[in-house]
Amino acid sequence: MTDEILDTLWAGMREKTKLLIQENERFAVIVDKEDRVYWETSDQYDSDGGHTDTQAWNDFLNRSAIVEITPCGHLDDSTRLDFKRLVAEATARAIDNDFACAEKMLVDAEKFVNNRNQEISRFWYLSASGTVAALVVVVGLCLWLLRQSIIPFTGYIAFYTAVSAVAGALGALLSIILRMGRSHLDCSSGKKLHYLEASSRIVAGCISGGAMFLAIKAGVVGDAVFNAPVSLAGQVLLAIMAGASERWMPSIISKFDNDTKV
Image (cartoon, rainbow, N blue to C red; front, side, top):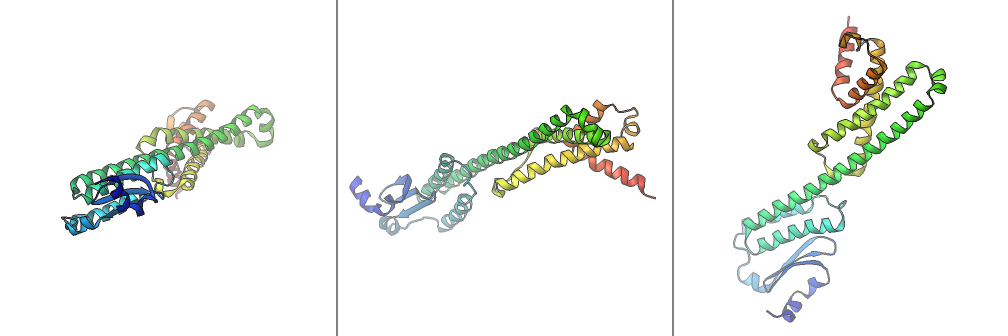
């Protein structure tokens, strides 16, 4: 079929086309300017019987609709178009009654967009946690450099509780970095929730680090746990470990609760 005939046949689709996937005398499949998969069939295709397996076609439409609405607005234009192209290619295979190949393409499209979403989620989470931790460390450095002036006003306990909170933030950041490859993040929850959760982890690390120092001074941990006095360096190290561990502080709280029960 000549290009002139195809131009006439699919003239209505040309003006909305962003990416042409397949076009012949039987059907045409495109990604439109709004990044949606769009397709049409010709009268010849319909008169020839259309889809050989109506059930398989309906199943494909349901599956492709679910895959296509996977959140991807946060991806860059090129990556988003690549994802839509995979879905559109699967649609072309299905219209051509190659449902096995169409399903494989949908699986690839779903895997592709999920991997890209995971990458975005990790970037959001690491950038937010790193930024908050960096701010806490800057505050900690200022406190340490001005310690001779600050300690007379705040007292030893309050000052080193703050220092331990900074150490706990570093521990929380270390934990996030080490576990990031094993973490399952959902990009569809949005950037704000990622930032909030990452910031909350750093804040929890601060609280854990400060609480660990107070627990050492209160005798809840230290001599009773390690059978040796804990130096200042050891206290900071324990604060880092408390910030990194999600189980340590709850276990100490549980121990303290059990010791105070009558």
